[in-house]
Length: 172
Image (cartoon, rainbow, N blue to C red; front, side, top):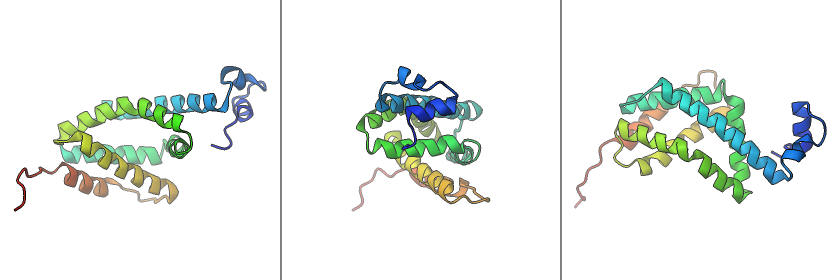
């Protein structure tokens, strides 16, 4: 993120010097544009997955998340690395935090629908548990790649625990 400058964008895009700053006057404006572009690409990847699968069981839901983790750490590795860099930057720039929440709202909506369909009785509770764990699995694979990376067993165990029926009885 420190290398993200108007000059660097001009050079990478093959534009005349100053072109980027004509569109994005400040570094914050440039960061916001990067986040919007990133969010559009990542949302398109999630929506592509959503058109290829419709998980109706916990196991199918876990398989879909495992496939997405493999895509995120394989063919979409660069985009995923950008996501983590943006998340770290959001810890420093509160305006990015708000923007990330807003751009992720659409993905969160259908993700919670997937959870409901797969058996969650509390998707608002289960979504952060599931996605935070998924995020950690992906982060570890990005940091220390494993040629035999198979996140399914771990994700399946998590999903089975999160989506198991909850007793409504109070222990005595």
